[in-house]
Length: 149
Image (cartoon, rainbow, N blue to C red; front, side, top):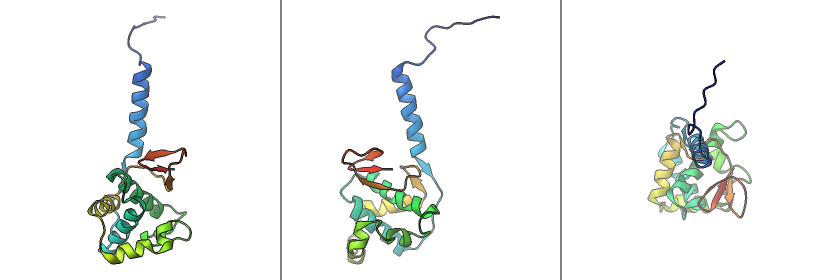
């Protein structure tokens, strides 16, 4: 039996942490494939993104769009963007009428439209997560002021 011992070939704690973070990051950024829809549905999604994350960085806006699309793909939710957005008790701005007001005004931020387009193209920066809320010390993937879970 031959044993071969090599010094300095292992990972440092810092290297292990960096590798693990890179692996987590790779799982977060996925592309599920394009979801084809009409311009009105794109703007509806953008209006929801604006209501939920209009004041967040672009990454947070894409994350909200990704949550909606993850729900569309999930058998636990309606299979349309409209159905997901207006599902009972899910998105407060949809229930209060704010999404409709933003949509009907036509004053939707360009960044929210781009985020909706990116989410519709299949991009997800939250993996397959289907929920988010204000951070307030909660566990999960934190992007801006929201935690995704």
